[in-house]
Image 1 (cartoon, helix red, strand yellow):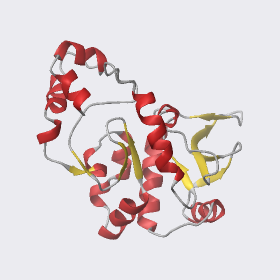
Image 2 (cartoon, rainbow, N blue to C red):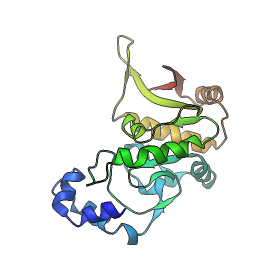
Image 3 (cartoon, one colour):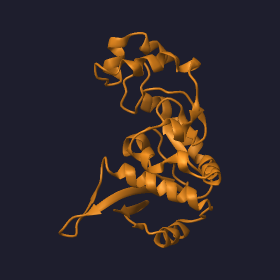
Length: 210
């Protein structure tokens, strides 16, 4: 946070480091005010395709509590945070260039250490860029979710930007179900009953077909 606030004192450097356009100076102001800004739960704070599909504000209280206990978000600023952890508005991504603070090097060991303590299956929805900032360590029961679509010739291909909506919808459905699933087999059974085309893919992966 100190590094990001320090960077925010230099608007020109911030534009380059955060990849901002000329009309996005408000993002720099947010970073400058990190320690005094109002906070809100992370799943309400974040925006974008994934969070639109999650639509956290419309979830019942039981579902939000389940998400708070089971969903973690990998933040470039805060590391792993719970879905209901209160955070301020900020601008920082995995590819931001903070002077003297390489984000991958900064987060990799600590995020992996936290993931090492998790029991039960871990369903990793992160992009590969965020996985690189804190891989799930060997020995943890974990599967990586890959969203795919099928071409006219039957070949599967991974989706990029549009996979986020599917991950948001899937997280919403899991939160609304609000039940612990103790294994990948249980997850696959639940997904089939809930209308999701989820199946095993490459070793250590699941494929969600859309």
